[in-house]
Image (tube, rainbow, N blue to C red; front, side):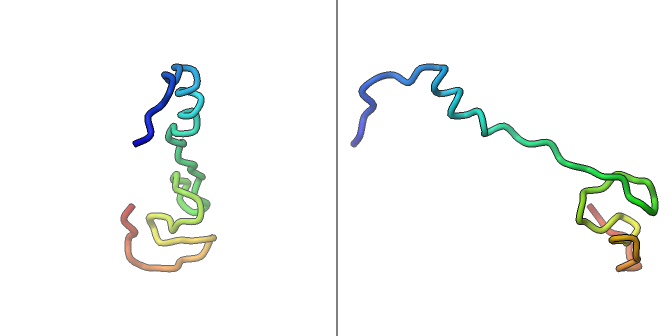
Length: 60
């Protein structure tokens, strides 16, 4: 089994983990209700790109 020859420093370890942080969720304002929603998703009242695509309430 492979074993590291030297201890990995905290700096090198943390630089490797620099991209592991969670990204924030992008939200936009809905044109019809003014409510915040995720882009490219149906709004809670059933609208998508300014037109109604469903009459049922959408769960998020």
